[in-house]
Length: 392
Image (cartoon, rainbow, N blue to C red; front, side):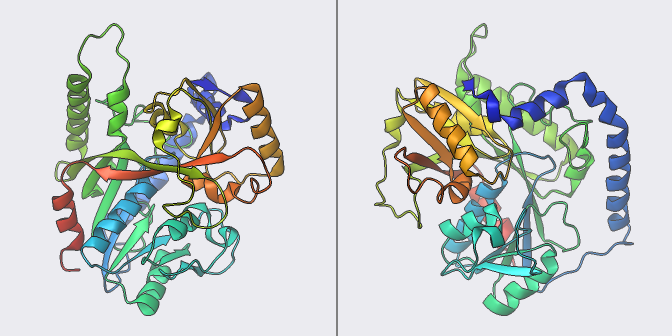
């Protein structure tokens, strides 16, 4: 994989955390850790009390910054609930949304009711690609939940990125964690480093609050290219996942630990409107042997590249923007230049980025393809559904 350095700000952020300057941030991490631990303690002893709604509440979140597969997990869980005829709504904060409303209904389950700017990119993507499930954004999830109950009479509320939002009581806490095959015995890599010197939002002891730990990107272990190690890939994957699970069981011995993969579903052009199954869909095998420019503004661009590499392209060059990046005409000009200089055959982006690129690509000759990816739980689905739907 090659990197296009001009706009790869995500890579620059990683380099900063790996540099000696990072140690200047450690005192701030200590202070941050004291604040977070103190807040959690106040909830534990009952000084701070979570407010409860008269329905089942399920939170999907993480304890690290960056992409962990959280939103694809929310989509997968929402669809599992639909299959059980459970009426569900999804609540999000609506990160970087422009609306000043306390609560915004992004989708009523039948139609999209708000713009991308009013919704935030993740909420708008969910509204575009989920049918029959209301999507609501609001900084205060309790208030948003009340609106969902009053307007849509739902049985279950799904909180996207709700692990740290403790003001609303929940019945099930699900954590999404990507598998790091390089250090499976320490799944958070620098496990002692909290923000801003590291990537942890909370100390690893917070794992005790989790009811379910969903390991994501376990298929990335299959893509390891062994050089000096002659161990077959299947055996290596089993060893990595075994070590990872053992590490988590130390911190959360009562949590249900599940595995999942990010499975490509289809490839289609980035254009206006909701893509239908017949919307000039491309076969995934079209990536075979191609020179690809991967463009994304997500938390874990390396995982996106790893998924593309499953289809044996000649090469993949990455143009990584910051997470939740809002694209401009200047960005599009840079993408066009990178496409030409890299002599790529195809530009591929994510569904999250599609929402913010669609208006910019309308009059351009170069077609940007969107890769739709679904999170698939590969084991323990029945146990998870049972835990999600009890008493709902």
